[in-house]
Image (cartoon, one colour):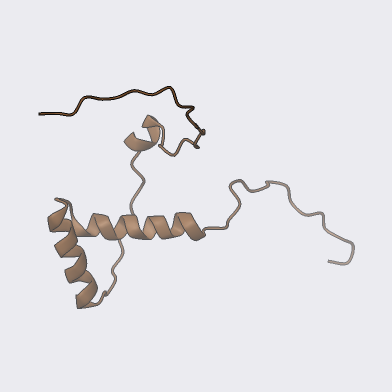
Length: 92
């Protein structure tokens, strides 16, 4: 039924890839939510409802994750802010 595997002694090329999986503590962490009211097009809501049904999840969760992914991609704010204050100059 199945073909026999034929092994060879060929050189293999391997490369190290960056670890892209989040650590377990990030998976367990739940961010604080903020309730908002937003008006979306009927077409968008129907799309997310249909896709959510296909993937057995909630459409609001899909929209939230989409917005979070957008923020993660385009957020250019520094990761840590300096707590130092600017020195005042004379006459200010």
